[in-house]
Each structure stands twice: as C-alpha cells, then as structure tokens.
Image (cartoon, rainbow, N blue to C red; front, side, top):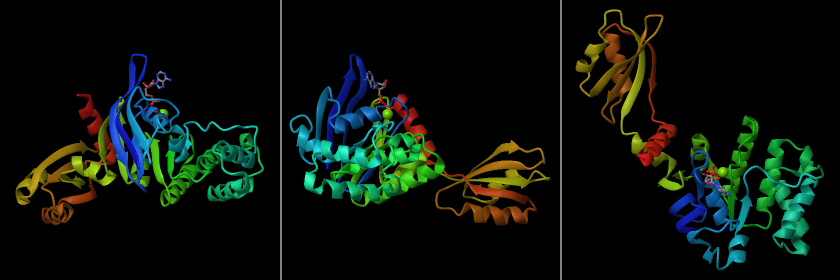
Length: 313
Ligand code: ADP
Ligand code: MG
C-alpha cells in the first residue's frame, strides 16, 4: 500500500509536482502516464525517498518516507530512468553489489542473486561486463538490481525507453510476470504500453494529476459515441439519403474523396446500435458498393489528448 497525500515538489520557484494525491493497493500495476516534463520521475524519486518533497506526505506500507526512511526504502525496488548501472562490473557482480547495498544477509546473498538473475533471463550473460551487453540486456540488469532483496513494490521509471520492438515485448512480458507477485508503478509516455500492462492509469501533466482510472474507463469516458467509417462508390449520390433510411443515424459526414472516385464517410449513430449490419444491408439495397468499412474507435490516445487539453484550459 502506497499513500501519497498532497505532495508538492518545488525546485527553487519552479513547481515540478503540485499537490498530488493517490493511493496504490497491493498487487496493482499502475502506470504513471504523461508527456516529458510532466513530473513522473520527480514523483517516483519522492516515493523512493531519493529526493524529499517540499510538502505533503508519503507512506509506503505504513512507513512515512521522511520519518522512517530506511523502512520505507526497504519495501521498494527502484529502477531509475536511463539505466544507470556500473559498466565495469559483470552482471553477477552488479546484482551482488545491489544485494549488499540492500543489506541482503551474507549467507543468503548468493542464492538471492542467483534467483533474480534467473528471473530476469540473465543466466547466459551473468559473467559478462554490463558494458558489453545490448541496451535490452542492460535494462534487465537494472531490473535485476531493483528486484534483489525481494521488495514488495517495484518502481520502474520508463522501463522500455530506448529498446527495440522485440526487447520492448520481452520487458513488458517480464513486468506482467512480476506483477503477479509485486505491486508495480511504472512510468511511460506511451499510452498503448500503459493500457497493455497496467490495470490502473494515473495521468499526470504539468505536475498535476488530471485523471486516475482503469484504461477501459478512460476510453469510455470520452467514447460514448458509436461511429464507423465507410468507403463507398456512390455514383448516384444517394449516400446522404441513407440518414433518413436508418433512423438511429445521427450524422453522416463526408470525410474524403479519393482519386478513384470512392468517398469515405463517417457515420455516427446512437449507442448500442449495430451500425455496421444496418449500413451494410441498406447500402446493398441502394446499390452503393462498399469498398471498406471499419469501426472508428476512440483510442486511449484520444482520451489522453482530450484529458490533457481539458486540464490546460
Ligand atoms: P518527467 O519524468 O515526467 O519527464 P520530471 O519529473 O523529470 O518529468 O520533471 C518535471 C519538471 O521538473 C520538469 O519541468 C523538469 O524540468 C523539472 N526538474 C526535474 N528535475 C529538476 C532539477 N533537479 N532541478 C530543477 N528542475 C527540475
Ligand atoms: Mg522522467
């Protein structure tokens, strides 16, 4: 359980994070989502006790980060932004060093290091210097460093930045797997990533939280409409009349005319209408040929932009 109450962080006069509050329950995978400079890293650094807030309170598993910093820190495995690992150590040496820092007992250290090396898929490269590893593997090493010592909570700052698509998939799968046994907070500026991995999203912009919800609900909050795109060949220009034929249609809008004379329309109807079926049979009756038909979903991307725009007003 993490509780953040009215936390503000100022750098001189500049406010990096302003009066944010949220709580995270055990077992949740939470995405801190926002554009660059939103305050994600600042928030994470405060949670981990790496920097102190200007005002407000943070408790980690009941331990106040300012009053019981050592206890609070023990609950957390932190993977900072940009993979700051010692490149003149081997994988095993680095993870062992992290275990020492976290005061993992000498007797059990070897076994615990071994365990996280396996867990993060590093067994094959454990004796290589980290500087000779690919970016994806270095990310895993950083993850292993966060995991050692068996913290309940993992805080991962932009865990997939700079990785190629294959590495991104691997790291995401690893995070999902770790999510079964840990509470996880990760930051990202990528919406699809957060919706794939997380069950809760906190959207932050310009140091303020502008929404907290499940990825599904965030989409629903802005997605009350039922829209499709159809591309048709409508030689007799009968498309406009379709609106009168299907009573549930609220709007038909010409989106574009293509070079091959086909036209794309946006059709909007009331919610819960099976628009595609109705439009298909009506256009067939009118001899209008359908070249393409697709659902126009409001994506999380749209939801995010709307929320951010709303927040700026
Ligand atoms: P994010 O991780 O979301 O990209 P940050 O938390 O790094 O955002 O930064 C939030 C704001 O705080 C930015 O405007 C940034 O310039 C500012 N900031 C971050 N760290 C410092 C610092 N050490 N000194 C002054 N300003 C900082
Ligand atoms: Mg950051």
